[in-house]
Length: 267
Image: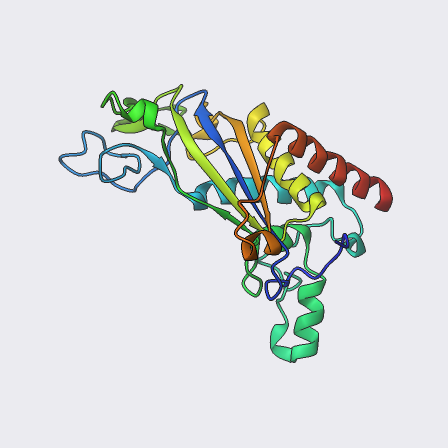
């Protein structure tokens, strides 16, 4: 596959990929559900499933990775012709911003989409990556203990640098050491764009990026433990073949190398 195939290639299914693993919290994790109620036990509860266990929405994972990758690409400041750049979705130069001026111009702008829009999608381009909601692992659910803690918080007067009178509140966090099952699905993956995804996971693993809210207070440190990569082609699906299981460490290393080679080619 060409390194710069059109990002809008959903009319032709060549390959599908499923990356599976576990996300483990190193510190408390806060993915909030908004304001609390009388029965919540906290002013700021975390999101829970119907059984009361916390979960991480796929959109939260996707958003954290996208913002991390966008910041890195903007800092690298590579030429737009390489596709290794990230647009500003709020600007007039965002990918697909002028798509109302005709079909040919729209197609040209989609084909010239930035790397993050190629991978995660934009308002005119579907995402190649899909994250499922991450649920607490079956092993941890089996004992019935819900891994949620309630912590104290206070509002600080930034001018006086003291605690606001009467501004104490409670908030929930997912306990450190909690494991969540993670699944990531990719349509027609390209090695160098998968390298960007691997780079985003690496930044979260290293603690340079955080997941969820209150990260400035030390929350949101997580680590990914990948256990499987399944690759399926269109022919596999037509012939009822299950696809090929790959070693996740080898695949992640391969994707990182592909991104490094592409960066060297265009630098």
